Image (cartoon, rainbow, N blue to C red):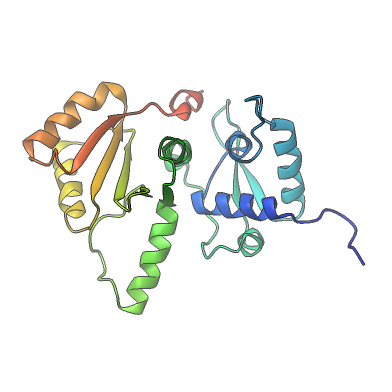
Length: 228
């Protein structure tokens, strides 16, 4: 017999897994990812209705933000992680990191759209995998740097993604660079706000790593949307 009430669909599981991989997202980001329409318009109403169902089932939760243009963010619950079948714990809310976290969601989606055949591994996935590796004895503690994301291109090359919304001091940049040298990435794509490109490019050239680090301009949607 069919149970009464809302039924979990395959897309629901994909949504839960996607939210869990990123940690914290907005309803609009879910709409863009899963409810886009052929005419280019977002199926926002359909997305909001489905998210309300998932919240009612205790699979996701809403948390308030201090940003008037995005007053709520979404994250999975422990039950949501189980239904989404992901081995990643629900994210914690860290207000100081929220803008960066939401920007990374948009950057990951853009990278997938711009690089057909590529796959993205989020920072949360990387940290979870490395935790398992350390406990299995296959990775040394404190080795290298955990990037903001990892893009595996169709040709098999692996690119570390670094998103820098707050320009770092020269010594911080050099520390991060030393950590990256302990990793096995083919390239680092370092995304910064357009006005910061010349400064970061100068640091790259001074450290003679222009063949390894590619500085790229990027303006996240939520840089302006979350300043209210």
